[in-house]
Length: 434
Image (cartoon, rainbow, N blue to C red):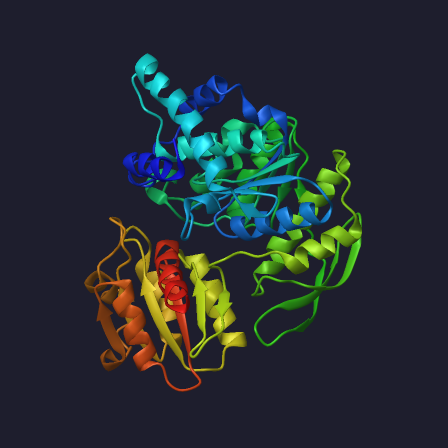
């Protein structure tokens, strides 16, 4: 199987959310058929509602700065499937990606014959990532949980170090309609014997997490709240002093934008220190270097140009609030907002947070079967918003054209909502720059 055939095969499995099926049995059988590749390296798993991607990006950068060979598994991708499997900071090569998918396909087809069910897209992608990590001889696999935790495929890897970023309501159709229910699903990644790092949580979520820790006999470690902001760059990068029980990190200029990154940085540092206790050599200098060099495309990702474009996957209420806080604090230029989202999101709550900041609002639909139409998005616009400042675009390409035309001199375009929108827009803009 070559790379193109691997992509065609994955597409044939159906959309990862529309075909999602929570449960560990398929992934466990796949991994067993592949010789349990996850046992060849240490594993870290990060779950939560917001901040997972930024946290694993920071941890990966810290570990690479320390000379540790890493594999990083994230989802979804923005442009290329290879973004989901990163080896030592680089997307998997087409050859490694194809080799891994090929091995997993054979195991999946055998499983279908013997057990009557073909593993889903995400189950096969998770197995492929773990296979690729073993093939590349990584020392540490860093896994971003896809959906929930208790029954997410990444949980089958049985990571010995886990973390929970802030938990909020999201994906209620899969995880439950209450915050306590969602927290229980995510907290289930905590098992007896693991090291568990916990970000600041709401009282409801914290109560659920503490009960899970008590049940498993795990003493949680809380991400430090001892962080002082000592300055900020104009584009929203903060300079901080961060103190933990094991170290003091002064004058750190976070590479990822926004005040919400303080919590993510705190979790990443606690994870790095925990890995140090497990035998990994991670210096004070490596932790600082990782925090100052980490990258996370599509999340408060500011690209220069005329006008500049800010990409951010604010796909739920908490993400929308974080984006609004960033725009209010660091962007004083007129904002043209290009927005598209999945129809199962809390569109009204997202809209209340970010639509009022827009001088111009363009509603569009990314190329995704779950995407809301512009007409549906219109219902999420606050009644007080001037309708003359709203435009509708049936495609992302048309939305970008309208945005450029409507953006005032000195203004900025912000593309936000679904990460599928961000990826599609980013690819279009990169293509025009070539």
